[in-house]
Image 1 (cartoon, one colour):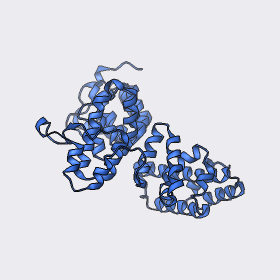
Image 2 (cartoon, one colour; image 1 turned 135 degrees about the vertical axis):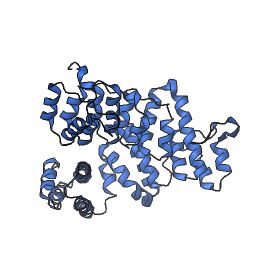
Image 3 (tube, rainbow, N blue to C red; image 1 turned 180 degrees about the vertical axis):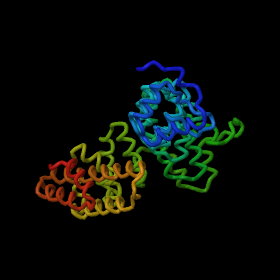
Image 4 (cartoon, rainbow, N blue to C red; image 1 turned 90 degrees about the horizontal axis):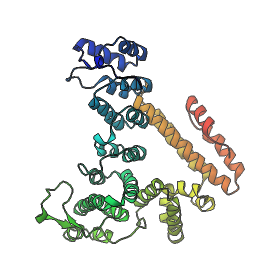
Length: 386
């Protein structure tokens, strides 16, 4: 790693700082490199909204971020850039900045939790994020960030020495949802292991022991009988397809797809109508477990399913702005990857029950049904012919 040059830290005059920001915003890598080689400062005045490094992060230009990160001396600048990369959900830039000295423990964990990105959340937890300052998990649960649940369970299991302190955040959120009368989240937190009998404050309340209550007390004083029912211990996914979706997502994060598979099979044996509603959330687990025959019984018409997926993708692509922005391109790529994954699962299920000819035909149709040529070519390249 290059040795930091202190001359780069002296604050630039406003006009020179604006010029440097413009070079960064327009991705002028070689001009910025020449600027640094000339030993010209890259530190802008304090009243500027963003540092050159933060601007580079906003552009997503990997090489420019790397160049500036290696030549920034002030820790707070690297940390602000890390927080910006986190908020933009750019995991590759988060990893780069940490490699270049940005410090995860100095960024509030809630920033990662609010991305809804389980990989970023897990990266923060693996790199020493502070799980207690400002009660980040309680905050995330009360904001209904369900992608925080899986990493929470995994982290709690890996750190039994602090499990009780982590439990307090879970129980705080449970008391909050009992007060709000939110049956779904009461059930979900109970599934996660919340204890309705612990006494403490609700999220956002003053920490006054005289006002502490248990979730049971709060629910008993409310009007919802369903909330009280939700406090009964269970891990069965309730009769709510959204809750089943949350449970299956947690199982996927924990690498316990067999739990989703067995839960779905049990539901299917008792209530086919409810199982049909849960099937979209169970599909990934069923495919990876090789439960093709069971999955096939919940696909009424493979062709209609494919046409629906293609129509959704085409409408999403048509709604994208022109010219595209960096964010719209990121979302477009995600939409295309989701389409490929959904189609691939459909083809694998068909092939798994011996319908190879139908799978081959639908693969061709999945490619032809996409309106935009460049996207069609991308899908053709990635879609396996089973």
